[in-house]
Image 1 (cartoon, rainbow over the protein chains, first blue to last red):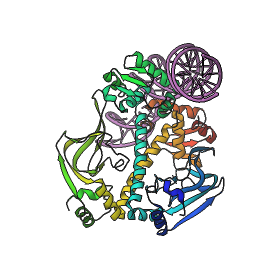
Image 2: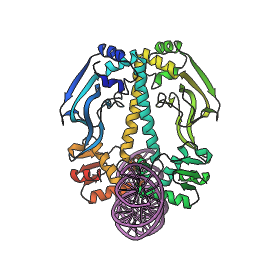
Image 3: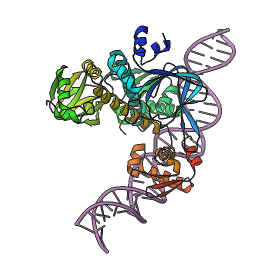
Image 4: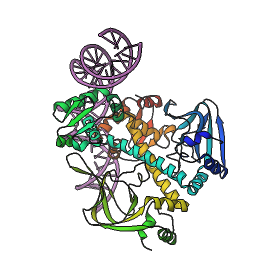
Length: 223
Length: 223
DNA sequence: GATGGTCTGTAACATATGTTACAATATACG
DNA sequence: CGTATATTGTAACATATGTTACAGACCATC
């Protein structure tokens, strides 16, 4: 087993050791080592290959006009770099990729990877599941921003919870987490919830929330 | 040629007529007709098939708690329904789908479609390109919301334009369009731009903008 | 049952943005 | 050249949200 970590990756998961070995045999791949701080990819560079972090840790980092950098995310084994953009038209790295610590990256040319997927339905299915989930996540996230007020976001969130039609739901995260999810300040969320309760739209008991005025709530998601 | 419209679809584009015919022969497909106002899919329903609009027009529509509906988007030939979610884990329709006018939908089971893709690299590549572009679009869109102020959004937008590093860029849309893109009110954007000019960060001449203070601009994208 | 930590409610104040309305420009088109 | 149309600049005002700070409620662990 060359890269045992692959078995846990979203893209190679569900395949057996010998199957992964066979796939690797049938394709050109290489492994590159990056020392701490060295650059694995530059923003704007064309993406020609799938890169999977085998060991160590890398980060995506943006540089703004004045040269200031800001970290976007860490990518750890066994995850892939820019997998959601890989096959886009004129795919380019959206960020600089830099090794946090000494790291190994598995590199497979994207055309070779496409050939692999065409030859193994589970591999194909893995990738499709991965990217569809990503698209779904992003699109759900974006939907919240279409509600311009905090009350609107919260009302929409409530309506998306299981049991909303029964008029009683259970919130599954803390206000802290919710406020981050909405992209608003925590006290502002608390105030919005308080006002909605005062207005008789909902009644709050810990994480149990009763939806008292469905019509009123739905007005919030529209205005 | 059974469905000439397919040649123009993102998923079947680039294939010749005989190739498309051959693919259709090798798979179970069916065509369903929907009369004006009838429901092609319900929100929450499991997505078992790829559906492509062959003729007519359908719309995605959300229903909120009080039963009020709001249109999300129209889907016209030769586009597909929920293609970006099709292979997600527990894929469900995110919206109700309703025929605007009498319409025909081509229906291919998603497992069959996966088999088709595995057998034809262009078909596979088409789908991958489609969904990667979608993910890229969504993620770019979402990035703008991470800048909490209008000035931050605008500064980031400027820095993403070609020639930004040269200190001179040309805006490619009207303030009206930009404000919609940012999700803000048009006069607010005008005010923000005016203030940035007063503060000596930029100088504006019609659609030509000079970036005078890169360091100052980059501060806006961080605070 | 005490103690420390996290989560929640609330307040006062600052500020960014929305709203509405109108004037001043550009641009298109005859 | 002149008129209509779209685009942009500007103003006054209303309001939603952010910020900061603190107090009370819950929860675990000892």
